Image 1 (cartoon, one colour):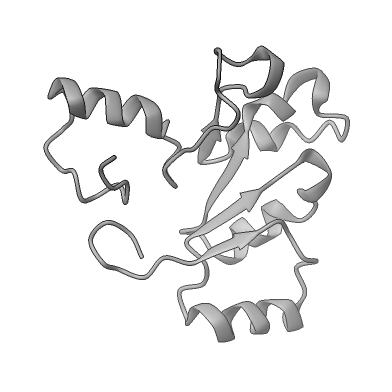
Image 2 (image 1 turned 135 degrees about the vertical axis):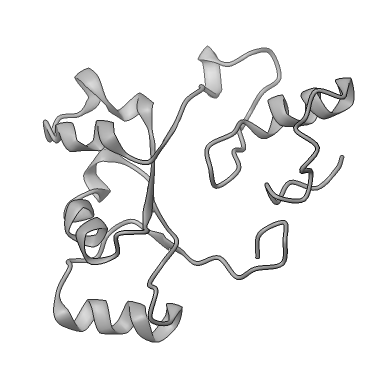
Length: 133
């Protein structure tokens, strides 16, 4: 559920887009299909455009770190994902940051919480699905 209590469906990675897989997805999501398609790595993106064409309201989520020289599939259409995540973890991350969280719309949760603490949020605190600390 999102911050407003509405159901949200997220498909992770892409099964082959066939009539039977579309029927299976629809049986889980209902007639509108999934809301989001989370593409975890470059090698899990085959067929993402077919899923997007099948479900026009689908928002594809992908990390920009797998673009450019890391896009060994040379699939430039990934640059047009509706939600492109950014940021690093591990040895390239700020001190003590072991992982990173985003809202489904790609907003960095830590940045969002810092803005709220300063009173800089947009006043719609329930819309992003991120609770308080």
